Amino acid sequence: MHSASPEGFDIPAVDFLNLRVSVRTVQVEPKMIQRTESAEDILSQAALDVIHALSRSLSRTSQGSSSSLKRKAAVGIMMELQQLSEKLFSSEGENAEQILEDLDDVRVIVNKLKRINDDDLVSDEEDEASQEKKEAAVELELLGKHLSRVADREALRSIIEQVRKQERLFAFQLRLWEDKQAVMRLLQVHVEQFTYGTSSFSLWVELAKQKCVQRALAKDPNGDEKKKKIVVFGSSQGLLCFYTAALLPACTVTGYEVLPCLVDLATSFQPLFEDRVEFILGDMLAADVSDANIVILTSLCWTTDTLAKVADKLAREMKDGALVVDYRKDTFQEKHKQSIYSSSSSASSSSSSPSSSSSPSSRAIKRASLTQLTACLDKALSGEGASRKESSRQGHTQAAKKGGVFSLVAMLEGKCSWGKQQPLYIHKRKELP
Image (cartoon, rainbow, N blue to C red; front, side, top):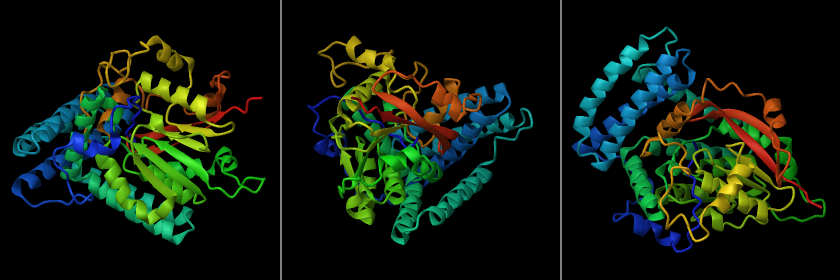
């Protein structure tokens, strides 16, 4: 779920520029974290690799198995894996040997799960690793088909390969976990808001093809040569920004992110796209979107309060005819707007404890650490995934609410790290008289 690491906190007292210092006592340099060779680090990496492989396998089962029993069992095992990853990170890997022993017990349960029905959706760790490599190869092949600029193609290929490599490292996942815990405490928000995931390049290819997107980025008939502007709320490790810049080279892309380690990683690649991409460590609610042609929201795990604040900001500040690309269909629905006014006028995200009404789910997991695991678990527990058959573009469009400042103009679907099909909804700010 790109990320998708959402950050929308109306708390001007926080100095985001110094957030790297305030949330961590130790800085890890260089930004591209390297695998170490100590015995403890090797065991920690081995434990993380097993958790990653089992998570991917069980993720596919929870979304696609024809057996309800099998799906529920997969979700239960993923909860156990989440707890093990929490223990691994909270000890900084010191208990990796014990975690590996616990994972052997999990394997036994997974092997039993494989014998339920015959849809064979639970694969071996070796099969899962092979499948992951195939998916990565397919994604890289798409670059050659859809990117005519050689420099952008090679730059994006290098970025994708390096990001995938970093995502698998224990050092990177530990630093990500530490940042989530620190920022969660600093901002007094739910950690679910920082769920980490990645959208596929193929999904972004389809987005760039949309006629409404092309119209929004078309040259100004009055001869204005100013580059079109795209803003990403929750830019994570930067992939969505780089996808966008490569597919729409006439635009500038600015990403807002609140987790320092992700901004560090994204910024380390920024020179490959020169001044066309920029990353800002800070609150997206402070972003200037008055001249933005498109704003992208990585909103899947945002709370109701965050959705309401973002919807209100975009309705007030975006220009007529601008687009909002959103992972959710309901961001601009009235129920989110009402939450702004139902809260105390003196309350803010930094001073009030998160309430159960603003949490995505009371059963949501308490920590987020591994790519895919949290987002997939939340979707499975909420009854979404393979059982949700609402995939018709026509059906989505007809269901759009007609009132309000924004209207739904398009919908598309594509692959992401937390599911086979993730919808993207494109809303247009109405041109008011």
